[in-house]
Length: 331
Image (tube, rainbow, N blue to C red; front, side, top):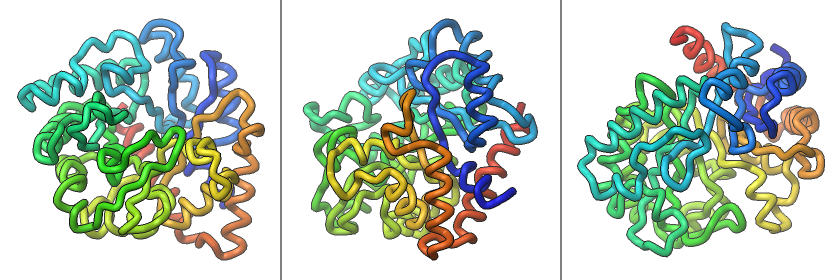
């Protein structure tokens, strides 16, 4: 693989619509490592979605990572998901979480989805919090038990993702339109918001989604751009899997000048140690500063400039290729 192909493999992209031929052409042209399905990709039955996801596979030996946000309840892209959501599960025995996420994962597998961005490991007891209805617990311990149960439920059907590291519950605000922040210290975090992530990692979750939120006492930049948070996740929590950003375009959408440049956000994230970058693109990505070819070119230029090492790109690309190869063996 060329350097540009390796960089492209670190991108998870979105193409609006349900045109299978267009999706296949898009993947052949840009060679991303993954695609995320949003509501605009779901127009019919599970079989219809399966036909779309089949079109995404160009090389069966290395199928793309196909992800979806399927939490249940308020956040579910695919129809037919009538299993209980976090709003109910947080007050039910943990076994019910295992059962709900097992059923949900089987549905996703039938549709050709292999990753669920569906396990919300955030903790909040505040009903006014935007994440409250989606969080699996109102205390660290209750959330941790149900996060582990959800990972167990999904394990035989899809790859689980814990989100939104290092924990949205402590940082008020919605990261779709702002950069939420908290003054919580690392010691306080370790005793609270870290607990569900530690539990999910111990249960075997292979993906962690890193959020666009700040813990100012730890690092004054968003966690998605933070080397200290990558180190904490790897070295303190023992996570050896794949880290992926929340949609990087959310940073641009905050309107803050320092996050206006989409390529710069990508470069900072990879330099910090992120494995994969998520872009929920519109039909006109160039208008968002997120044309895939331009992103690859800009990241490659950052490698030439010494901002990211070739070794970092190589390590991330190998980790993702291994995951994709493993998926081909499960098929």
